[in-house]
Length: 230
Image 1 (tube, helix red, strand yellow):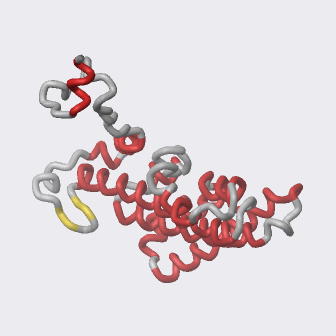
Image 2 (spheres, rainbow, N blue to C red; image 1 turned 180 degrees about the horizontal axis):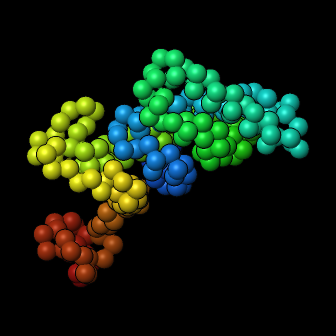
């Protein structure tokens, strides 16, 4: 992919068209494990975005220096360094979120999204394009986890971001905060996103090129209609 591709497209592609979770089905482990609450989804998404952005920038900057034979170990060391850094930051400043994410925060090191972007994009493109790619993929991943966490928290716990939801708070469907509910919620969101991504615009009616069988022929006042009828 060339470096001169519009940077705006590099950012927006990860939000819907190439969403890493809902379209490419990457990062399923944290998606299903930590999204019992919307806040956990935001925390995991932002932590992953931080690691993705940092590793993409460093790998892109060193792409001509890292020997091809050791690129995979080098990528892992770079990614693990940023994971360790974000782990220290969360433990020091947001200990409750650090405890909620648990071992899944450490497992960001082997997250397919991060390693995949490093191998497929950052190692082949410039720093700015790689940074935009990381931001777009990170936003898409964060939005997917936030949507998952919101649905599961609202229906499964009757709450959302600490606020009680009327009716649902006293009658929560606990299934949604269990693994089965995670799979069901993920399937429904993926189906909805695919419906939006694959929606085709309505076909244009070309007047004057033959009105026979046209659904708008009865009320059409196009001059070409009379010529077509003759």
